[in-house]
Length: 87
Image (tube, rainbow, N blue to C red):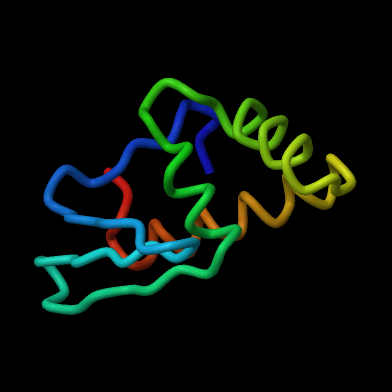
């Protein structure tokens, strides 16, 4: 996985409802619903924040171990990539 800031696929439409995000992926003709942390990671993806910066925010908000948080975030980002949600 690249160390450049993750970017959302511009063709993906998404909305946050409460603490869950809902994303429509036209290329797959499907939608994805994200859990609370996945939704927050999705929200933090702005094309400028690096994985490390996203990790720092998640660690501050959820009081988790930085190494575990980064591993989990990289896993979430890989899942987003597999589901064509990232550019």
